[in-house]
Amino acid sequence: MKKYGKNYILAIALLCASFSVSADFKAGGDAYMKGDYETAAKEFLPLAENGDHRAMYALGSMYAVGHGVPRDLKEALKWFRKAAVYGRPDAQYKIGLMYDRGLGLRQDYRKALNWYGKSAKNGFGLAQYKIGQMYIAGHGVKQNYIKAFAWLKTATSQGVGDKNNDLATIILELTPEQLIDANKLADQYMEKYTSSR
Picture 1 (cartoon, rainbow, N blue to C red):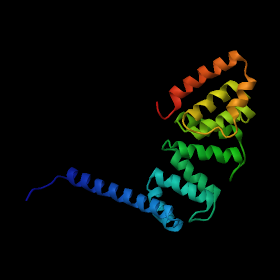
Picture 2 (picture 1 turned 135 degrees about the vertical axis):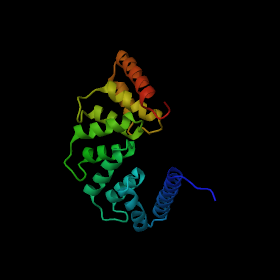
Picture 3 (picture 1 turned 60 degrees about the vertical axis):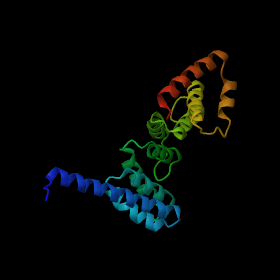
């Protein structure tokens, strides 16, 4: 009979544990898709407590709307923050959204812009779009149509729709020279901050 070393046994144990974690996350996701939110929450909670950023984000989303758990925006923010530590742009976006709208905490456009910025620089189109809108309105930042155009164009290049026709509105506000500058800046943003980079 062949003897196996401690490292081999440890590697097998870690491999089995990772399959178990993936299986539990899948079970939680399947339950969620079926509308069995309570089961999903029960599957996600131990995973999130053990450092699974996917489960952290899922729990944050569930607490934000009250799916399978009581609606609790402070708890949602807690889980989004934990997921954001792992660089999840969707969690960073949700934190920005909570500050932007004053959901569960005091509205703070500067903090919203900071979180949207982290998400946008990680290639998240919805955050890029929100930054563009903030530059249009001057929320948390000095109004700047060139930067607004660049962020909005970057977002739309990733398939985020311009439902308010913000790009067309901004073009009317820009001189031809400013539009050239805005397009150059948009090209730079698209090169640096899109998921296709």
